[in-house]
Image (tube, rainbow, N blue to C red; front, side, top):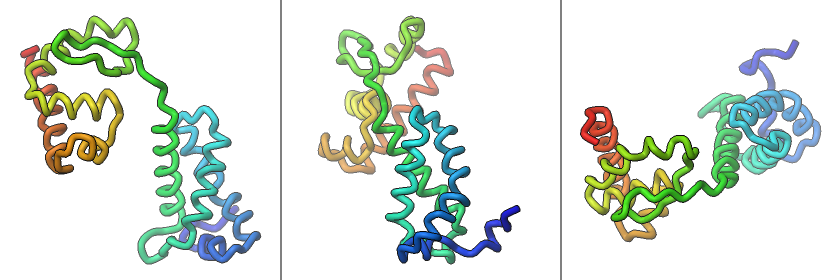
Length: 180
């Protein structure tokens, strides 16, 4: 039975130095963790995802600092970031849905049976200030990052974040209160 992580010898500093034995040990020690995380993210090609995570881990091994976190935590953090990146890259192109005549078509990943349920959402979105509606749709429906929206629109990043937060709060409150 392997020793608990806190008593095991750190592998990442050895991996950073190019120790081949440490690489094999690292795969054995953290492979199950990374595979479980890949399955949790529903990666279709879990083996490819695991391989990408370990490649990123080899590149990042020199940044590991035991004073900041334990080695399993560092491995999980690298894996999580890589899996999120992979998830975002693998998004399928959603179906275009017309929200209303005064709101341009945007990509919303919805099944056909949910189309009728969009009526209240369309009405609430139509009540938002134009700029809030635009950045909300870019973030939620088109998958743009806040930084991308800021760069594209010329708005400060903090303003983009505030618009999205306020718009989401308004939509939530109005839908919950039946004001749609």
